[in-house]
Image 1 (cartoon, rainbow, N blue to C red):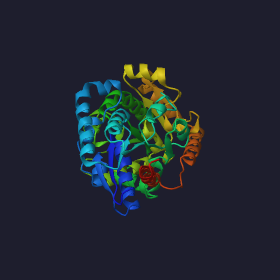
Image 2: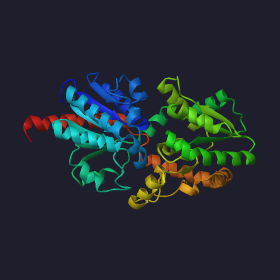
Image 3: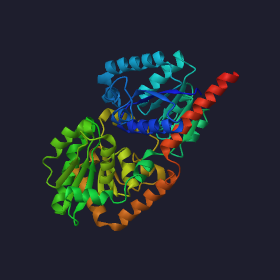
Image 4: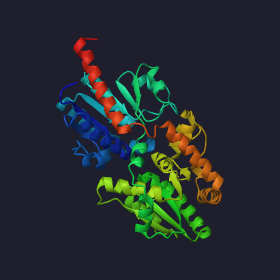
Length: 405
């Protein structure tokens, strides 16, 4: 590894952007600032000093239906990223999530600059679908960083180094002040006897358009049952206006946490304070479910996807749940409602049962404890483990080149 390594980091969506920002911070700490970082990222990575090659939003699409309309732009950005890497010659390229774009970029770099260390952060879910991807990744990647402890064997059996570094939610939740939830409730003027429901309909326009309706219907039905119900809705900046429009007709008092114009870290702290302030949650399937579990918030999960995506998913999925905490503990502790089952009445009934049944809430919380024990809650910070893994990969590859092995 050179005295001042140059690392190109590319993130393709908001969750990857947060991972990238934490990784940047730890890389600087571990090298005493002797690291150059370039790449592509969003608000969080920009806040850490990144000057992105192009806007991250240009590649923040997922699923076959969403990708096809943007193929021309994605090809253009792939060429720009490749050219930036060729022009600057980084020691390592770290791609984060955005698996299709990341894979295409890594393959190009493998062909044009084989001496570059190639690392993918967030191991693809080969345990859930397309298990043969592990073998394909082993052909061009040097290392994979895994968020879950059960993932490394899937890659190691194909000869690809895979380090379990831990899930970032462990780190983020641990850094929140103890009274953050109470302070946010007071700041929002939420009464002490209110039932607080956190609603998380997703961070993409496509998710808001599909889930805004059934989630809103569920809130409407719950408001009739529970007059003291109040809603907290953390929102991504990109969809703040859409969410505001969708929620205008909701009868329950709704507190939208709009991060626009707010420093990233402050917005993140307030979002996590919202989790701490919630009694229950209605959430889209995704990382937010694990974030809620970190704060031991009992929840109901709902999700709808385009019919074509559903058709493909049903034929390739090897797990029978889409909720991360369920997968970690190997048990459906969080109820899920998918596609047509994700409707206002079903969601409202499930939430009402959760509100009324302490035993059901306690069972979820016990499961959350098990999940976070498996994720290494209390161990070394995930971002620190990730940074050390990246630097180890650089050191090992440089040693192999110097010895000719």
